[in-house]
Amino acid sequence: MNRPRVPITTDAIEAAQRLRNGGLVVIPTETVYGLGADATHVNALERIYAVKGRPVGHPLILHVADTETANHWADMSHPAAQTLALACWPGPLTMLLPRRPSVDDIITGGRDTVGIRVPAHPLTLSLLAQHGGAIAAPSANRFGRVSPTTVAHVLDDIGDILDPERDLILDGGPCDVGVESTIIDLTVDPPQILRPGGIPTEDIERMLGAPTSAPQGPSRASGMMPSHYAPATPMRLVDDRNAAATAAHGINAVVIDRTDDLVDAARHLYDDLRAADQRNADLIIAVMPPPIGLGHALRDRLTRAAAGRDQAHPNQDDSTP
Ligand code: TXA
Ligand code: MG
Image: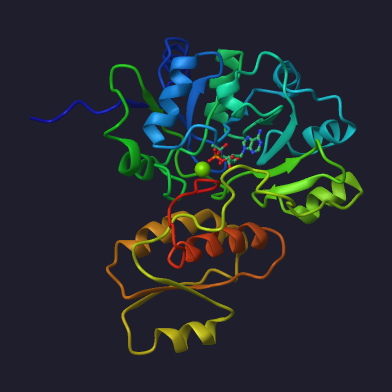
């Protein structure tokens, strides 16, 4: 007997209804799919952690329709917050800002900052407009796997865990950017880039007219540990195409090399990793993109994916994957 499957729809009104009733809604964004809950619905927020298998204390990003709504949840008065919101939203930038009292502790893991962004996907913007509030959403993958960029990835990871009676998947097609949002902490001076992502650091520094710094101190974005999604297949990073050919010689290897087009590389990264892992190869060989533009985010994710194989405790992290 077939178990009922969670509904998949493009109906934002139905999705808003399910959120109001305390269900989880998988939302398409320009970066990756998110597992969303109404930010005021504590039971639904708790279910996010259960469905993902994610330890509590890893904070969630809030998604809102516009800058004005963001100001209900985060203190947007910082001049840099205004500048970046104007330049980047809707888009793949998450800002860490002082939280408002309306933000539940389960969203921030008890921190005094909250991560917030306006995602650039028409279906989710329509859902957010219907909803009027904030949707808390981590990436819609099981803890320790790479983020999903298609509904098929979501179904692979959590399709059987979602509740067909309460939950819903909003199908927005394949994600356009393909890597998660850039996270910038504006509560420190200079601002810190906690996670390179869809908006390159160089662009942000140009918008701010000032430099940013790399993360310092003990793991400021909780969960930003070196090991990440570990493909079951061993993975090696190489600097160029020739090195990939040499490494692949005489063995059954899958080579990931999209260094000619970084936009395309980001869009396909997680699908490439999932597909490579299903090929039963001896080795996945990935050519590292240059450290420019989206290359920063790509290098970060590839390094974490490869590090997982060598760590004493692989798969403990969900910072990105
Ligand atoms: O593109 C994205 O950002 C996607 C889409 C769905 O919006 N979301 C996403 O969420 O990647 P998640 O939960 O998989 O990764 C968010 C990261 C986690 O490492 C989390 O610990 C960190 O952001 N984070 C969120 N709020 C934070 C806070 N207040 N302080 C420190 N780190 C925070
Ligand atoms: Mg994630």
